[in-house]
Length: 138
Image (cartoon, rainbow, N blue to C red; front, side, top):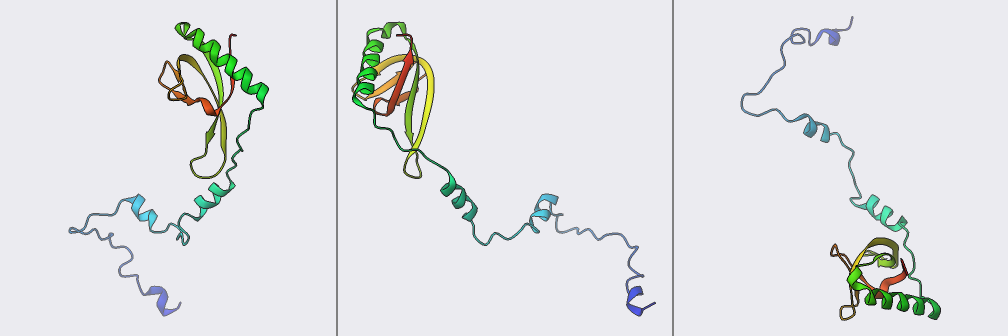
């Protein structure tokens, strides 16, 4: 046997030292010491953001605009009934050009021409200029 193989035989069986002054570090914090070093902070998030797809806003043709106007007019005439509608509209992306089309269903409280919004009974508001489709019982 080599000499260095017996170097710690005298202390190997001693109990583990616990400090009376310093509290023991929580296991989660101890594990964090060994986490990989992130040299480029935010790089992964930037790559994901770049890869996220957005859509371009569709420009409605005259026939589609006319149909949408007729449906809005119908809604205004039947507002006391609070009709249920399904609205498809364009929601611009907050971080880059383009956006996404979203669809929501609900009961309409009013068509606010002054603010240019469709107002639902639950308080949701959708800008009329972003609406591309309006479905309901017509």
